[in-house]
Image (cartoon, rainbow, N blue to C red; front, side, top):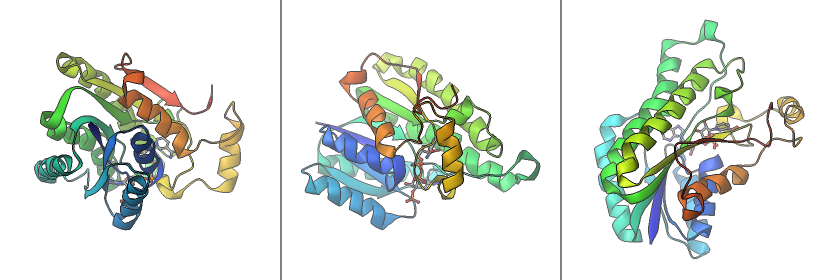
Length: 245
Ligand SMILES: NC(=O)c1ccc[n+]([C@@H]2O[C@H](COP(=O)([O-])OP(=O)(O)OC[C@H]3O[C@@H](n4cnc5c(N)ncnc54)[C@H](OP(=O)(O)O)[C@@H]3O)[C@@H](O)[C@H]2O)c1
């Protein structure tokens, strides 16, 4: 029995990934930062469908808390059953602000959430992971398409994309696979959500003529976590319906 950890599983892509992974037979430990009730609803929905799930609090910017988070994860694994077979570094937040006016505090929070957090969350959970486990890091199509107003966010996602290859290289001895999933515009609350007129613009820039839904990203993440994606390693896979191609 395999169990995985998903950071930021209370909403959006993380919640959809939790549901999809459970549907494919994986146990799910999802984390939340502020939305405990939303996380509990995801857990309840998985259990109602006969799956295994638990929710734990985690702030991915609080590196000092990660040793305790590892202990809590071990306890959740004991309760759910199964080995730790995967980690999805999904937690994230957005910010629209041009380079001219980005503050140091905004820069630091984005760096901590999107680069430092995934680095040290992964380091903390490595001892619990079984050989052959799979790690998926959520990056962004903004690493490929320069988009005004999201420079620090995109730069740290770009760093996470590089880190993905380094993790794949260093963890290969344990047969761990590490990949990045890079969503195009997806309908979630990230950065306050996508306003209707902006959605129309993004849809017009997408070959399939619309923005994506969380489940469409979740299916790719779930594939990478299981044997269906067993020979994919060190890659960045854009999931964007043909955004700005
Ligand atoms: N939506 C898009 O168009 C898009 C495009 C490209 C990439 N992405 C990436 O995909 C990932 C998921 O985004 P989403 O759109 O699903 O976002 P979302 O709907 O806003 O959900 C964000 C999740 O991250 C959690 N979170 C936020 N800050 C956190 C922190 N400091 N520590 C721990 N958890 C934290 C939230 O927890 P609480 O709710 O409990 O506070 C929530 O579960 C992110 O990494 C994002 O950058 C999204």
